[in-house]
Image 1: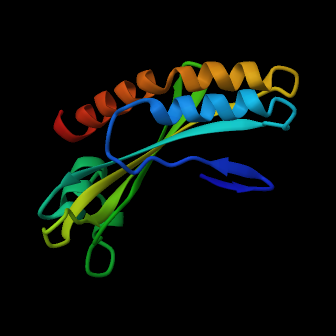
Image 2: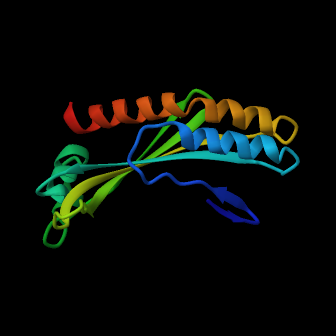
Image 3: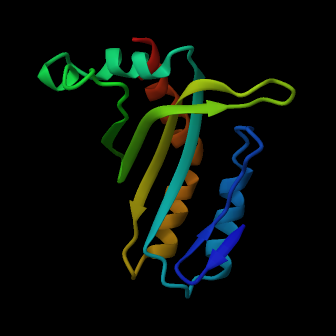
Length: 153
């Protein structure tokens, strides 16, 4: 948990889909209802192993044209997608990265970073953020369904 004057950040790097992190956040917001909450972000990160992620991203998301043949050709691209999702906005970034597992060397992958941003009104912030946090499992399910579509279809 990281708290600074402008935000609180509660992280769960366990890799588990247990919603206990959302429960912690709900308890925090309910214990401090007089804080001026303005928004909530539910952040989810996924990795997909890929032997040539730059080529995969270009093939998947970039249409061939003069912009792909400038100089010595386009080498890589990242993609930012924005969706409206049930009173929140999903900002999804798809890019090239690396990941490492315990005992396994670092390897290339596609990194998918999602942020479900929910704005809150001053008058009903605790209630609105509580509702948004109660959607944590739904956000996870939505994110991984979308990732499946982006990567496999």
